[in-house]
Image (cartoon, rainbow, N blue to C red; front, side, top):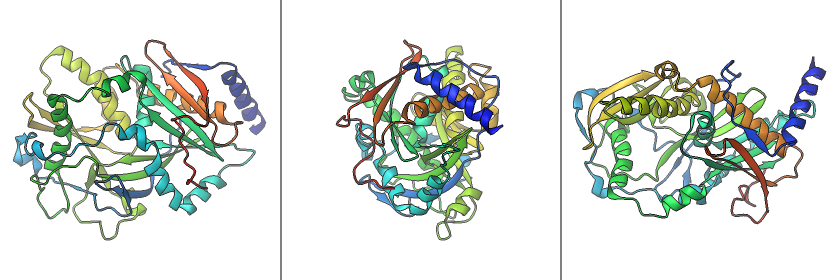
Length: 382
């Protein structure tokens, strides 16, 4: 049986390596095997974008928030400190790699899973990158650029701005765009508190540089996944700060908070089902969140209605405009395409993978070691 599996995999690798592209096809026949994500670490990112051990930024869901409606999402906008939009390109994976550098036991555990008989790689990335790839078969507007580099049996994946995105971000954001950005953070402030016994502090200035990041480990078919994700908060009646560890975080319910405009017209309903439900499902499914809480607002930034949706119901609510199986099948195909490209390459060799809805397939190209897209810095070690 093992010999047959090896033969099939080698045949797949030969096919993939014979072409420089991966066709984006919709496969919905079966949901691939996905291991329940487990928490393997957590840390804070402070207002200076520096990593800090612990969970000082962890927040708790304020369950009496429904009684405080409506929420004015404009309150405190003048004190908003917005994250520099260029940081996503400049930081690369550095924050996650700083954390991983200190986790020698975890690294050795992952390294030990690799054997010549079972050439299993672990992909290291942020959740946002995985979400972007998952949405690809159902994305009609925005392309993506992802670079990959292998280091022993780790494959590091990092998303970079496309040329179109760079041109867009070169223009300063409009006041309306800045306000939209602020509204999401302000909504969280109304529903999250620093302690279960306290009311939310809605007068505190918001700094979007600050994060509470959780690191998850999972497997998709034969590929390991290690990814960091910013978590909004947890749903727990008692404070867990003093006793917080990975075992505790694996047992508590994490929460995801979203804002959305009131749905009044058919075009809005279609956009909601096609894009918003898709994004919400991808983000929450990857971290095992069971419910997403949505604040429905008007055009002036006032949340007038709160609703909670079960994550497992989101695909049905889409009226077949997208498929959960299709998302995960394409993610699996993409990871295998990257693995086939890098498997026999020297460590730190850099490849770029790009997709555009106008082209319809993923292209790949090798990049020089001096490229601006280098992912693995000299200070990283295994």
